Image (cartoon, rainbow, N blue to C red; front, top):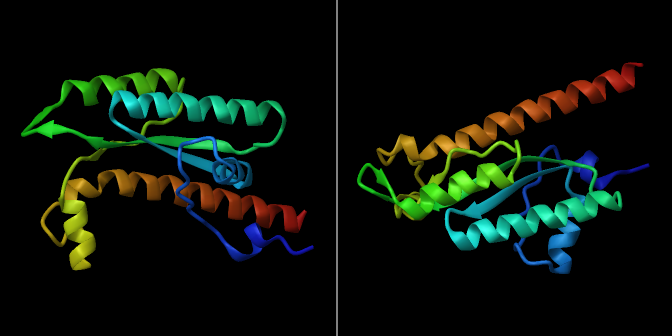
Length: 159
């Protein structure tokens, strides 16, 4: 039988809204793995809590059988070398409500991301390689999962 999700894609990233809409429910149910973005703010923390509750509810009825790869804090505000208190507290709270879910190094609030997109250059090419760290970590986790899944698929075929 043809399985579109497994036969056509190794990785498919869908950015769905955090609200409990049909598109969000469909996205979560269709996913094997979730990365949950959460703004480094009170609002973002509340959205994360609602998303984790949704995932738990879907797991309870076997509608979601995947796993959460991590929480991705974004818009982490810094003034020079000092992190804004609200960002710091929000990210710490994300770690607590995530109960062991990996929290990705935060994506800083920066116009450099827009600059990279607008110019078609990488952050490293623009002289900001440190801003790439969260994305590098996400890629490492996805590659590890992908290789593990490929190995398991190969093993199943051989058995």
